[in-house]
Length: 330
Length: 247
Ligand SMILES: Nc1ncnc2c1ncn2[C@@H]1O[C@H](COP(=O)(O)OP(=O)(O)O)[C@@H](O)[C@H]1O
Ligand SMILES: [Mg+2]
Image 1 (cartoon, rainbow over the protein chains, first blue to last red):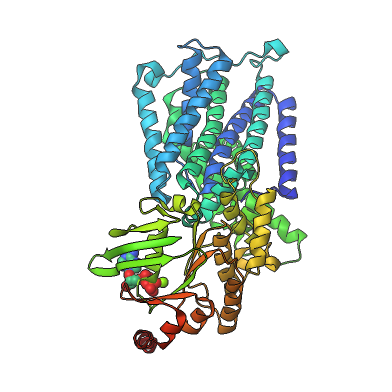
Image 2 (image 1 turned 90 degrees about the vertical axis):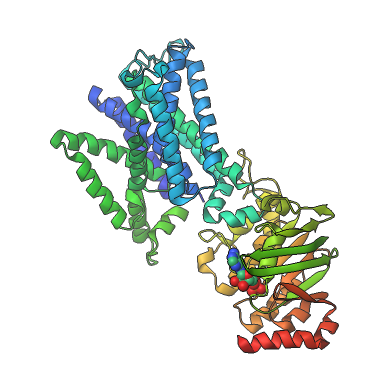
């Protein structure tokens, strides 16, 4: 069940300040990295919503982001829609597709659920890869950014675009919190804790799962639209299952079911990737070792670890050995 | 209020429910007795829809609900507690009750407000907590309360949907005799218009709350009548004491 603690508010303020500082002081390369972090953060936020609070460990969120990206690209270029309309339509389509996937997969659990979502992701990937309208292997170029010049904002400016992504991420975070705190979100958590009982109490479980999965997909769709506008070119690689896998790694690295943790995870992951890949081509290995360390430490990700250390230091009571529970329900 | 006709169920070669017909009037408190493995829990599972009978019908408040899924039956007023605790383990007592009350009040699917904070939900939570003596534990997590209190919560969660018919599967299983007696006092204080069907393996406790008694043996109804008649029944003694000695 989702709760904000003072510690989490403080962490959010800290993260936002850091991002703002970076947005106003960094040069081109730093801004590009910041934007990459913000978009990944949006994707893993969407994933944590379903995986961390409903046990729906999706391996198609990367593909859903891809649906948003391709949707926007095709609608704004080939179909000639204006960017705002294309954005809204792309996000709507992603939400709709996610809802259907959530509904269909709602009866599967554990490994079967993971495999079912993976299959959907792979279907989307191969469709995009094969269909001429999506540019196949070559991808699609010439994608425009949203035009906000009527309020004096130029999103073609790297710094402004980074700030735009930050504002959008903040809005998506607020939306995720609202969803998780709503009646729908509470029931969703209830289903994770005991699906059988929720059903016995009169809840139509598949509907709850489909609705939250659809909303989560909507956020992934927004991330996709921003990714398309960021690079202004997209290729099927965006929909590869490894993107979903990476998103899951980031969620676990940051702290599953904490909502704040995955944001931390996104920052750590992107920075590590850039720092390490300039040092060695084997950077994946190092990330792998770090992930294993985090998982073996039995803390709930980086954020869970920090949260626990703080709780242990500020309280005289003993540390709960079930670290996962402490961070999840604190 | 709740009626079954000729309910029948087999698992492979094992015939667990044999032609069971039961009828509960509104407000009736019926206790189901029977040795272990008699098919009591399996009967409950068919009543609420978690299992589909091979044949026979279930009627709730005059409507045939045999084909309805679990959640729909629940929303029509049928609620059950489990023999083995089926709670929301990582959550607090208050949240456990609140999730159930939210479903009953139609707040479980809304996106625009928090169900657990709703006045109508909180009121049900408070009422139920009083009914099953959970007031002191509202903010404790399930993992922090004793087994006996969890048994109270198990029934509390079922009550929080404000059912017309409440099925309780051995509510006192695993708790000591004193606590079980206290539990039966709680049951006796439930509203008189609530229809209760209770599985209870302790005969003396059963006579505490029962208006009527059904005895199941090998999936079959072998007695259906008033407690006094049951008390004097040789058949019941034979079945019951027999299994008692076996166990
Ligand atoms: N899902 C199942 N599959 C096969 N056999 C079952 C199943 N559920 C119950 N049984 C069998 O049905 C019989 C009745 O079980 P149950 O209804 O749990 O008895 P009671 O609640 O009266 O102790 C037992 O022999 C049990 O082993
Ligand atoms: Mg039983």
